[in-house]
Image (cartoon, rainbow, N blue to C red):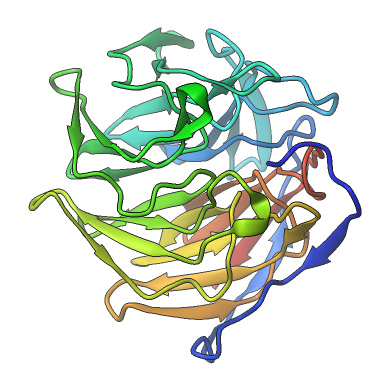
Length: 312
């Protein structure tokens, strides 16, 4: 997010001429969040969707966390985070939910905390801290490990290091740096390869369309087909081996874009746009559907409780 918005408009972005294919599907709605929230992410554990932290309707960072049961179409509050966070990615390795780094306070202070959610005890516990404090980063799970990319750290400087966390050893290590340092990106893994998608160099009016793939086995990055639009503040989820990317913002607008990357073909296709354009949102794939949660319906500080569901 870029701070309080000026003039507001909704934009679908500039679609590249190569993105001529489209994906069929339709959108519906699910139960809204218990409150409007932006700048959080989502992850799936044991058939339920979790979100944690973000900004509430007053623009205040929160520690509140919630869980969604699709069978009951119902949200419930779970144990609060140990401290308020926003721009903090969530990920699940095995049967454990991780909350990774993020930003604190209204001044966007990067943090190095790593927390796990103890479902059996309804509380959060600390694990080995990140090598460098960072927030507004992307995370993916490959080969049973967290792969953290992008974001910014101390001094509001972009972090280029790739940090890999091994849950079995409770230890981080640094890997080959990301070729294009950026924040407000999204990351996803397919077939053991991590894809770092879009983002920006702080400035929401300089969004990237860049896609870079990291191979943990060789510790090597390669450039892939660019995204059809340039977006930061977006979210993604993997369904049937394809990465669905949704939302984003510029300094004065938000995106409804829904573009899907096929890693096997190294190709993008367009899909039905979000009914509610927004940024700083969460996205999760569950039971053959993509759930898109909360976010900011205007650039900068704005919140919504809407939950929209895409079914191919």
